[in-house]
Amino acid sequence: MSRDGAIEPVAAEECRSILHYLRGEKDVWKRDLLLADFANKVDALSPGLADAMRELAIRSCLPQQGPRPEIGKILREDTRAPKLVDVVITTVTPLEWRAARNVFAVDEDSLQVHNGRLYYQLKLPCRAAQRDLEVVITSIMRPLNVRATKALSEIRHYFQGRIYFLLGIAAGRQGRVELGDVVIPEEVLYYPPGRRRPEGTEPRNPHKEVPEAVQRLVNYYEPEQTGFYDCLAAGIRGFATGDLPDGLDDSHRPSILANNVVLASGEELIQDGLLSDLFKTEERVAAGDEEGFGFAEGVGDSPWAIFRGISDYGVDPKPNNWQYVAVYAAGLALRDYIENDFDVPGSETF
Image 1 (cartoon, rainbow, N blue to C red):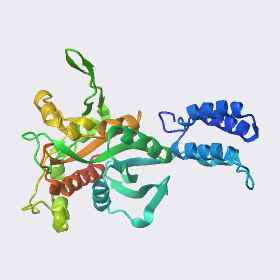
Image 2 (image 1 turned 120 degrees about the vertical axis):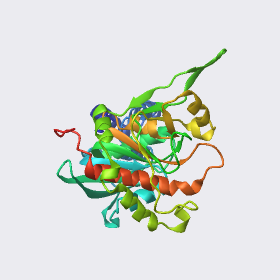
Image 3 (image 1 turned 60 degrees about the vertical axis):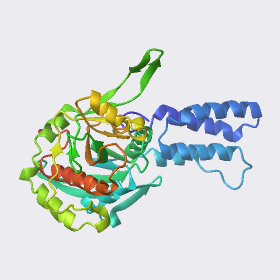
Image 4 (image 1 turned 90 degrees about the vertical axis):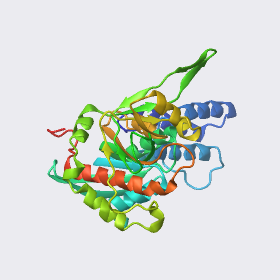
């Protein structure tokens, strides 16, 4: 797949040609060579098209039963252009997915299913753009950076956003953030990997910076002026008991941090408890997650940003009852930002 989300035409045509020869080739050795070549090329295709091509390859090895499907028809059906929308929002966990659907008041009738993934389409009014924006909400549904990158490639096959947002929870740096706060990082640091040497580990930490134009608009966002806290209080009053931390009421006023904030992203940070050590050495890191870097990789050259609610401090025992409040606050901040201070990439003010 190319970086703009379109299917790589050369790989698609090569796979189509191999399948054509497989259908008529009887020599076992030649078939093995064709199948090996096919396996090397099919991963370059979009998930839906790759699955259809693999099925045809398998069928070519079986006794013919009934009419064979038309390869050209499958290729034409799966190479349709992705639908252009203004905003694509993705979550990761089922809890984040539930909170996002609540925050954005999705209409269940707007549900679409593509390759087993659920998508909701809705319209949001945007003051800066002076029009309703086309928004899609979906979910990765599985943690870790590599899965996030793969999921974004698939999502972009169906919906091409002018901007992509990752919404969810993160572990925060105690003393810099409080539980329930919202961080909108300027940069995502992938930590680790590192190169192991006899004298120790040599850090090797790639990073992704949020596009400058996106950062600029986020820095103009002032939740105190938009009614954000009134909306949050109303939302908290409607929460189920199981979604509320003990003692939390509608006076909760989380901070929203967007200046000089770095998000660390890495599987070992959370699973192996390395985040607290990173907080001691990297002063700008305010939070950590397992998908931020993979998300930023998956969107390619498209604009992007991340909204994370702080649900714990990265050490056990974790207060799981803060998760829903944290992601709800982050989602509400994202919606509030889109409706009030956000403008569409490509516009005169972006």
